[in-house]
Amino acid sequence: MKNIGLVLSGGGVRGVAHLGVLQVLKEIGIDPVVLSGTSAGALVGAFYAAGHSIEHIFNFFKNTPVFKLGLFTASKPGFIDADKFGPILQEFFPEDNFEALQRKLFVTATDLIHGRVKTFSNGPLIETLLASAAVPVVFSPVQIDGLLYTDGGALNNFPVEPVAGLCDAIIGVDVHPLKDARPDEINSTFKVMERVFHLTVHYQAVQKYHQCNVVITPQELAKFGTFDRGHFEEIFEIGYKAAHAKRAQLIELVHTLKETG
Image (cartoon, rainbow, N blue to C red):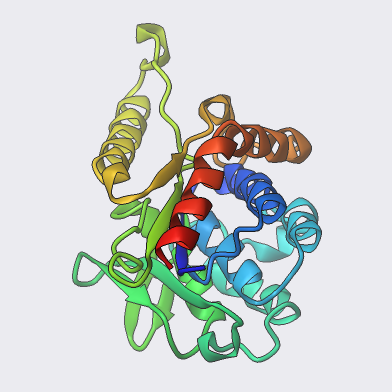
């Protein structure tokens, strides 16, 4: 069968829904060979590209602490020192290199110095994952080669560009859905800024859906926040159900690729 690419958006803990999607793809027999992800999607993509099982990845998200006292920083911008998660990831990526992965992976991050999206696909892996997942304000920016990087989702939360032209078909998964807001919910300067940010992220992603053969967007995830822990099983199930709803379309895609291959 021809090559299938997989695009994984950012979304904080909602990224666990990516695992539900991967479970459905596995059941169908779809094994993406090229992955592009940002933030939580980059983490899921890296684990999958390294050959870790879906169960193993799920346990990582569920058991890795985020707001732990030893991870806070007083000397860097942000509340949590992103670099302190390096040793945690080292356990899962001992070779710490893109070239050691079993599948091709693209990771996007936001270059704070030049104000642009940076795509990584070779060299050190862990520092790029930390940069891509460094949610602004919460996590400190990550320094790579003298430049500061933060959450890739800030400028491109649906990074389809790296896989376009490399694959015969693309499956996109957007776990950052947008829900309508009530006027009384937008009741402060921060809430206005937050709403505009979410609108921008969502709008930019939707404009690129047409570049994918199949797009999976679990709308039920809108009720969860970026750091809304404690709902991992439910989030996984939402991702699974959303992908299962596209099962016929996914199977048709496989058949079409086989016929044209």
